[in-house]
Length: 401
Image (tube, rainbow, N blue to C red):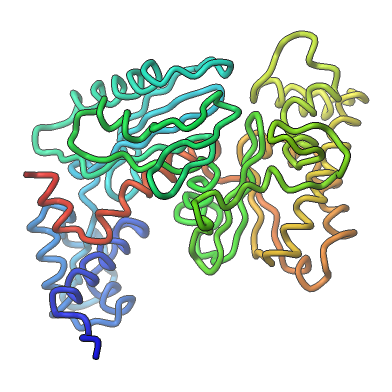
């Protein structure tokens, strides 16, 4: 007969649940926590006292209550004291941030990168250098409790290795292990696909808050995706779930870097749009080049308009397939797909109306990312904080050891 959870297990779970409320929702009163968690006031008081003693939260009187009687103390995250390092590695840009408990970006660094080469030593050295610069600016009582990186590539769940990253020129790279070594913090670096982590960020802090079923589509050189189903990120057996960019929408269409033809990435990606708009000869590429095409179409450039229309049709067909399969409440466009969608929304919606089943499309909402280019970085921070939220006191004890 299997034994039930021990009192310590229950306490650990409740501490994590309370800290999650504060981390994701911001300052909250003890009374509200009592209601949300379904626990009595004395238990909430004991839990907040433990987290306060550990330096994870602080309690203070509310500024204004508007009510008679003794006010309920407000619990706030110790954002300036407890933090993680978050990193984002994209085809054209790398970024690092120090993110405080509660999701507050306290400091940030970024730099351009050459998309045509991948040098692990140089890349991890630069990111570790950014982290050291930010750490030197912290107070002596601050503590780093985790680190994570969002990478534009497939990440193997078992060991965090970037197993394929054609848009980074990376293959079977132990990125997390090497970055952890260069950081020298005694902490592992968790690694996730950038689109998956951006989906997590939009679900936690962006346009998808309180939405249990959503799809996030991310564009840079290629197309990626993240799927939240029932409130949980869909990762797949090996961690490669969400490779939406390699869904075939046009059999026999353009060649894709994955070896197939007619993938969503091949029909909608940056290169296709720029080629169709006659913008390849000048050598410009990247997000700014995509925005220029969208702006040109808005000004009446016929070639740019036709290019956007063609790309919008394929994007809409891809969205229709996803709506039929996953029945999401929300589809979010991020990265360069934000601009592409805004410039081709009519085509996307038209294809959705033609190819998505009526019951699925009737209530789906199409939106652009609320977090913009910061979405993968915010998602990486949430990945780094996951360990803290599962066992707050143990993680903090290890960090202070």
